[in-house]
Every structure is written in C-alpha cells, then in structure tokens.
Length: 87
Image 1: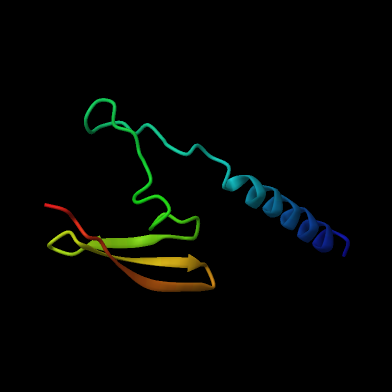
Image 2: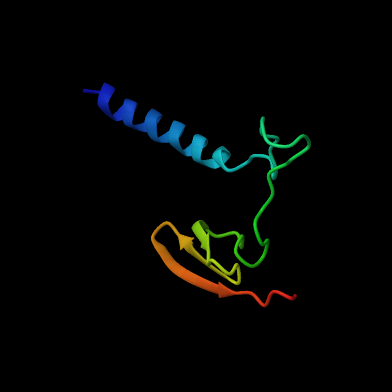
C-alpha cells in the first residue's frame, strides 16, 4: 500500500510547483486580430486593476459608472466606482 501515499505526495508536489509558477507571465500580450499594433493593457490601473482578483466589469450607459467584482477567491465583493468625466 505504498503507492497511494507516494502518488499523493507526488501529485501535491506537482500541484504546488504549478501553482507557484502559474502567475508568472507577461504584463501584456500581443493578440492576433484587431487593429495592427494593439496590445492588451490593464483597465484603470490602481483603481479597478488593483492586484486583487478583478473580474466581471460593466459600464453604465453614460460611461460614468463602472460595476465590477474584486477580492480574494474566498472574499469577493461587488464594487461600484463613479468617474467624473470632463466635457
């Protein structure tokens, strides 16, 4: 019955290594399609893209309010930010 504990240890070791390196990517990626020279970028860095798990954002019809989810996987909250857009 040595195989089961050995498999468990190897599986968790591999999962830990994958988890440690999974978030180490480029800050921006070149995507095919779209206009030539377009590069992916963070949306509202430091305001909405704040280093937490940010997702599911939408803008109000007037473009002055953004609704989004932010937080850690165990503590996600819905947030609203209003922006004063000049004329």
